[in-house]
Length: 297
Image 1 (cartoon, rainbow, N blue to C red):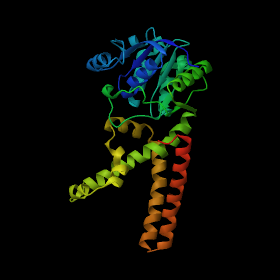
Image 2 (cartoon, helix red, strand yellow):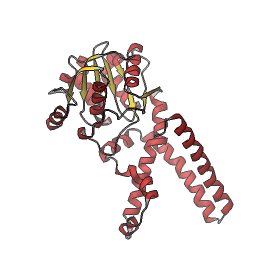
Image 3 (cartoon, rainbow, N blue to C red):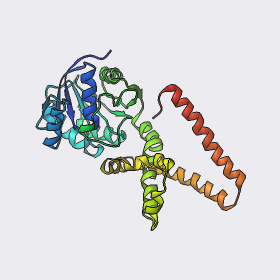
Image 4 (cartoon, rainbow, N blue to C red):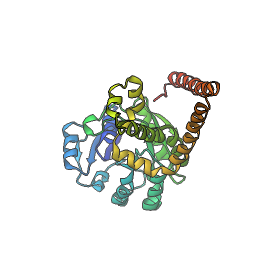
Protein backbone atom coordinates (compact mmCIF):
# COMPACT_ATOMS: atom_id res chain seq x y z
CA UNK A 1 0.00 0.00 0.00
CA UNK A 2 1.50 3.34 -1.05
CA UNK A 3 2.06 5.92 1.65
CA UNK A 4 0.90 9.53 1.43
CA UNK A 5 3.64 11.98 0.44
CA UNK A 6 3.78 15.51 1.84
CA UNK A 7 5.39 17.02 -1.24
CA UNK A 8 6.26 15.90 -4.74
CA UNK A 9 9.04 17.82 -6.47
CA UNK A 10 8.82 17.58 -10.27
CA UNK A 11 11.90 18.62 -12.24
CA UNK A 12 10.78 18.99 -15.84
CA UNK A 13 7.13 19.91 -16.18
CA UNK A 14 6.35 18.12 -19.43
CA UNK A 15 4.09 15.23 -20.40
CA UNK A 16 5.76 12.62 -18.17
CA UNK A 17 6.34 14.77 -15.07
CA UNK A 18 2.96 16.47 -15.34
CA UNK A 19 1.09 13.18 -15.79
CA UNK A 20 2.82 11.68 -12.72
CA UNK A 21 1.80 14.74 -10.66
CA UNK A 22 -1.82 14.50 -11.84
CA UNK A 23 -1.91 10.73 -11.20
CA UNK A 24 -0.63 11.16 -7.61
CA UNK A 25 -3.13 13.96 -7.00
CA UNK A 26 -6.03 11.91 -8.36
CA UNK A 27 -5.04 8.92 -6.21
CA UNK A 28 -4.85 11.16 -3.12
CA UNK A 29 -1.18 10.28 -2.61
CA UNK A 30 0.32 13.76 -2.35
CA UNK A 31 -0.53 16.92 -0.42
CA UNK A 32 1.39 19.40 -2.54
CA UNK A 33 3.27 19.46 -5.85
CA UNK A 34 6.17 21.83 -6.51
CA UNK A 35 7.47 22.02 -10.09
CA UNK A 36 10.55 23.37 -11.82
CA UNK A 37 11.09 23.82 -15.54
CA UNK A 38 13.82 25.62 -17.47
CA UNK A 39 11.11 27.74 -19.05
CA UNK A 40 9.09 29.88 -16.57
CA UNK A 41 6.15 29.94 -19.02
CA UNK A 42 5.95 26.12 -18.71
CA UNK A 43 5.69 26.19 -14.91
CA UNK A 44 3.17 29.02 -15.21
CA UNK A 45 1.05 26.87 -17.55
CA UNK A 46 1.46 23.85 -15.22
CA UNK A 47 0.15 25.96 -12.34
CA UNK A 48 -2.82 27.25 -14.36
CA UNK A 49 -3.72 23.69 -15.37
CA UNK A 50 -3.59 22.57 -11.73
CA UNK A 51 -0.74 20.13 -12.40
CA UNK A 52 1.53 21.81 -9.83
CA UNK A 53 0.61 23.92 -6.82
CA UNK A 54 3.77 25.97 -6.69
CA UNK A 55 6.52 26.89 -9.15
CA UNK A 56 10.14 26.57 -7.96
CA UNK A 57 12.80 28.93 -9.30
CA UNK A 58 15.43 26.19 -9.48
CA UNK A 59 15.72 22.40 -9.52
CA UNK A 60 17.22 22.58 -6.03
CA UNK A 61 14.20 24.50 -4.69
CA UNK A 62 11.86 21.87 -6.19
CA UNK A 63 13.70 19.27 -4.10
CA UNK A 64 13.67 21.35 -0.92
CA UNK A 65 10.99 19.99 1.43
CA UNK A 66 9.98 17.18 -0.97
CA UNK A 67 9.81 13.57 0.21
CA UNK A 68 9.45 12.27 -3.37
CA UNK A 69 11.18 13.76 -6.43
CA UNK A 70 10.62 12.91 -10.10
CA UNK A 71 13.35 13.94 -12.56
CA UNK A 72 11.51 14.15 -15.89
CA UNK A 73 14.11 15.82 -18.10
CA UNK A 74 15.66 14.58 -21.38
CA UNK A 75 18.15 11.76 -20.77
CA UNK A 76 21.08 13.99 -21.79
CA UNK A 77 20.17 16.55 -19.08
CA UNK A 78 20.03 14.01 -16.23
CA UNK A 79 23.63 14.41 -15.08
CA UNK A 80 23.37 18.22 -14.93
CA UNK A 81 20.15 17.80 -12.90
CA UNK A 82 21.89 15.50 -10.41
CA UNK A 83 24.64 18.12 -10.03
CA UNK A 84 22.06 20.85 -9.38
CA UNK A 85 20.24 18.93 -6.63
CA UNK A 86 22.88 16.66 -5.02
CA UNK A 87 23.23 18.78 -1.85
CA UNK A 88 19.58 18.07 -0.97
CA UNK A 89 19.57 14.34 -1.76
CA UNK A 90 18.77 13.28 1.80
CA UNK A 91 18.35 9.72 3.14
CA UNK A 92 14.74 8.55 3.02
CA UNK A 93 13.75 10.90 0.18
CA UNK A 94 12.73 8.95 -2.93
CA UNK A 95 14.38 10.16 -6.16
CA UNK A 96 13.27 8.69 -9.50
CA UNK A 97 13.74 9.49 -13.18
CA UNK A 98 11.69 8.49 -16.23
CA UNK A 99 14.48 8.04 -18.79
CA UNK A 100 14.15 5.58 -21.67
CA UNK A 101 17.76 4.46 -21.22
CA UNK A 102 19.13 3.32 -17.90
CA UNK A 103 22.83 2.45 -17.98
CA UNK A 104 23.92 6.04 -18.73
CA UNK A 105 21.54 7.43 -16.07
CA UNK A 106 22.85 4.98 -13.45
CA UNK A 107 26.48 5.82 -14.35
CA UNK A 108 25.73 9.54 -14.01
CA UNK A 109 24.03 8.97 -10.65
CA UNK A 110 27.06 7.04 -9.34
CA UNK A 111 29.47 9.74 -10.56
CA UNK A 112 27.55 12.72 -9.19
CA UNK A 113 25.60 11.49 -6.17
CA UNK A 114 28.34 9.18 -4.84
CA UNK A 115 27.20 7.82 -1.43
CA UNK A 116 23.86 9.65 -1.77
CA UNK A 117 22.98 7.32 -4.67
CA UNK A 118 21.16 5.15 -2.05
CA UNK A 119 18.15 7.47 -2.52
CA UNK A 120 17.89 6.97 -6.29
CA UNK A 121 15.53 4.44 -7.87
CA UNK A 122 15.91 4.62 -11.69
CA UNK A 123 12.55 4.13 -13.43
CA UNK A 124 11.32 3.81 -17.02
CA UNK A 125 7.55 4.05 -17.51
CA UNK A 126 6.59 2.47 -20.85
CA UNK A 127 4.11 5.21 -21.64
CA UNK A 128 3.87 8.37 -23.67
CA UNK A 129 2.14 10.17 -26.51
CA UNK A 130 3.42 11.45 -29.84
CA UNK A 131 2.62 14.96 -28.59
CA UNK A 132 4.64 16.03 -25.56
CA UNK A 133 4.35 19.07 -23.31
CA UNK A 134 2.46 19.98 -20.16
CA UNK A 135 -0.75 20.71 -22.10
CA UNK A 136 -1.06 16.97 -22.83
CA UNK A 137 -0.44 15.81 -19.23
CA UNK A 138 -2.92 13.08 -18.35
CA UNK A 139 -3.65 11.49 -14.96
CA UNK A 140 -4.32 8.15 -16.73
CA UNK A 141 -1.09 8.07 -18.76
CA UNK A 142 0.53 5.38 -16.57
CA UNK A 143 -2.59 3.36 -15.86
CA UNK A 144 -2.26 -0.20 -17.20
CA UNK A 145 1.32 0.48 -18.35
CA UNK A 146 4.53 -1.24 -17.38
CA UNK A 147 7.11 0.62 -15.32
CA UNK A 148 10.60 -0.84 -15.13
CA UNK A 149 12.75 -0.13 -12.09
CA UNK A 150 16.50 -0.70 -12.35
CA UNK A 151 17.79 -0.17 -8.78
CA UNK A 152 21.52 -0.11 -8.07
CA UNK A 153 23.06 -2.57 -5.61
CA UNK A 154 23.44 0.38 -3.15
CA UNK A 155 19.83 1.61 -3.50
CA UNK A 156 17.93 1.61 -0.19
CA UNK A 157 15.55 -1.42 -0.39
CA UNK A 158 12.86 0.54 1.50
CA UNK A 159 12.90 3.19 -1.23
CA UNK A 160 12.70 0.51 -3.95
CA UNK A 161 9.57 -0.77 -2.18
CA UNK A 162 8.20 2.77 -1.88
CA UNK A 163 8.77 3.32 -5.61
CA UNK A 164 7.07 0.00 -6.41
CA UNK A 165 4.07 0.94 -4.25
CA UNK A 166 3.60 4.42 -5.68
CA UNK A 167 3.68 3.26 -9.33
CA UNK A 168 1.34 0.36 -8.51
CA UNK A 169 -1.05 2.78 -6.76
CA UNK A 170 -1.46 4.79 -9.98
CA UNK A 171 -2.24 1.65 -11.96
CA UNK A 172 1.16 0.60 -13.32
CA UNK A 173 2.58 -2.90 -13.52
CA UNK A 174 6.05 -2.76 -11.94
CA UNK A 175 8.98 -4.90 -13.12
CA UNK A 176 12.61 -4.94 -11.98
CA UNK A 177 15.67 -5.43 -14.21
CA UNK A 178 19.36 -4.58 -14.28
CA UNK A 179 20.20 -1.39 -16.22
CA UNK A 180 22.20 -3.50 -18.71
CA UNK A 181 19.33 -5.93 -19.42
CA UNK A 182 16.92 -3.01 -19.70
CA UNK A 183 19.00 -1.23 -22.34
CA UNK A 184 19.58 -4.43 -24.35
CA UNK A 185 15.85 -5.25 -24.35
CA UNK A 186 14.68 -1.75 -25.27
CA UNK A 187 17.26 -1.44 -28.03
CA UNK A 188 15.47 -4.42 -29.61
CA UNK A 189 11.81 -3.56 -29.00
CA UNK A 190 11.74 0.26 -28.94
CA UNK A 191 14.91 2.05 -29.99
CA UNK A 192 15.70 0.12 -33.20
CA UNK A 193 12.07 0.30 -34.44
CA UNK A 194 12.22 4.09 -34.03
CA UNK A 195 15.52 4.27 -35.90
CA UNK A 196 14.09 2.12 -38.72
CA UNK A 197 10.93 4.25 -38.91
CA UNK A 198 12.99 7.45 -39.22
CA UNK A 199 15.30 5.92 -41.87
CA UNK A 200 12.48 4.28 -43.83
CA UNK A 201 10.31 7.41 -43.93
CA UNK A 202 13.28 9.47 -45.13
CA UNK A 203 14.03 6.88 -47.83
CA UNK A 204 10.51 7.24 -49.25
CA UNK A 205 10.01 10.97 -48.75
CA UNK A 206 13.39 11.93 -50.26
CA UNK A 207 12.88 10.09 -53.56
CA UNK A 208 12.10 12.30 -56.59
CA UNK A 209 8.56 10.84 -56.69
CA UNK A 210 8.34 10.61 -52.88
CA UNK A 211 5.48 13.07 -52.50
CA UNK A 212 3.41 11.18 -55.09
CA UNK A 213 4.13 7.84 -53.38
CA UNK A 214 3.12 9.25 -49.97
CA UNK A 215 -0.20 10.49 -51.40
CA UNK A 216 -1.08 6.84 -52.17
CA UNK A 217 -0.09 5.44 -48.74
CA UNK A 218 -2.80 3.66 -46.76
CA UNK A 219 -3.38 2.40 -43.20
CA UNK A 220 -0.52 -0.13 -43.32
CA UNK A 221 1.99 2.61 -44.11
CA UNK A 222 0.43 4.83 -41.41
CA UNK A 223 0.73 2.07 -38.78
CA UNK A 224 4.28 1.24 -39.79
CA UNK A 225 5.54 4.84 -39.75
CA UNK A 226 3.51 6.33 -36.86
CA UNK A 227 6.55 6.54 -34.58
CA UNK A 228 8.56 8.45 -37.20
CA UNK A 229 6.65 11.55 -36.00
CA UNK A 230 8.27 11.29 -32.53
CA UNK A 231 10.16 14.19 -30.91
CA UNK A 232 13.53 14.59 -32.72
CA UNK A 233 15.59 15.92 -29.78
CA UNK A 234 14.27 13.23 -27.41
CA UNK A 235 15.07 10.45 -29.88
CA UNK A 236 18.45 11.92 -30.83
CA UNK A 237 19.42 11.59 -27.13
CA UNK A 238 17.99 8.07 -26.76
CA UNK A 239 19.66 6.73 -29.92
CA UNK A 240 23.02 8.23 -28.96
CA UNK A 241 22.93 7.18 -25.31
CA UNK A 242 22.09 3.54 -26.13
CA UNK A 243 23.92 3.36 -29.45
CA UNK A 244 26.09 0.36 -28.50
CA UNK A 245 23.06 -1.90 -27.94
CA UNK A 246 21.06 -0.39 -30.82
CA UNK A 247 23.89 -0.98 -33.29
CA UNK A 248 24.07 -4.64 -32.19
CA UNK A 249 20.35 -4.96 -32.92
CA UNK A 250 20.73 -3.08 -36.21
CA UNK A 251 23.33 -5.63 -37.31
CA UNK A 252 20.98 -8.51 -36.48
CA UNK A 253 18.23 -6.80 -38.47
CA UNK A 254 20.59 -6.28 -41.41
CA UNK A 255 21.33 -10.04 -41.46
CA UNK A 256 17.63 -10.94 -41.60
CA UNK A 257 16.99 -8.32 -44.30
CA UNK A 258 19.97 -9.70 -46.28
CA UNK A 259 18.52 -13.22 -45.97
CA UNK A 260 15.17 -12.08 -47.42
CA UNK A 261 16.87 -10.20 -50.25
CA UNK A 262 19.04 -13.24 -50.99
CA UNK A 263 16.08 -15.64 -51.46
CA UNK A 264 14.22 -13.03 -53.54
CA UNK A 265 17.22 -12.57 -55.84
CA UNK A 266 17.48 -16.36 -56.14
CA UNK A 267 13.76 -16.55 -57.01
CA UNK A 268 13.27 -19.07 -54.19
CA UNK A 269 9.52 -18.81 -53.51
CA UNK A 270 9.49 -21.58 -50.91
CA UNK A 271 12.30 -20.07 -48.79
CA UNK A 272 10.70 -16.62 -49.03
CA UNK A 273 7.34 -17.98 -47.86
CA UNK A 274 9.08 -19.79 -44.97
CA UNK A 275 10.68 -16.56 -43.78
CA UNK A 276 7.38 -14.69 -44.03
CA UNK A 277 5.47 -17.51 -42.29
CA UNK A 278 8.00 -17.60 -39.45
CA UNK A 279 7.43 -13.88 -38.78
CA UNK A 280 3.66 -14.07 -39.31
CA UNK A 281 3.19 -17.02 -36.92
CA UNK A 282 5.46 -15.52 -34.26
CA UNK A 283 3.69 -12.15 -34.48
CA UNK A 284 0.25 -13.76 -34.23
CA UNK A 285 1.13 -15.83 -31.16
CA UNK A 286 2.90 -12.85 -29.51
CA UNK A 287 -0.15 -10.63 -30.12
CA UNK A 288 -2.50 -13.26 -28.62
CA UNK A 289 -0.26 -13.59 -25.56
CA UNK A 290 0.01 -9.83 -24.96
CA UNK A 291 -3.70 -9.28 -25.51
CA UNK A 292 -4.53 -11.96 -22.91
CA UNK A 293 -1.98 -10.69 -20.39
CA UNK A 294 -2.90 -7.05 -20.97
CA UNK A 295 0.74 -6.08 -21.34
CA UNK A 296 0.64 -5.22 -25.03
CA UNK A 297 1.79 -1.79 -26.06
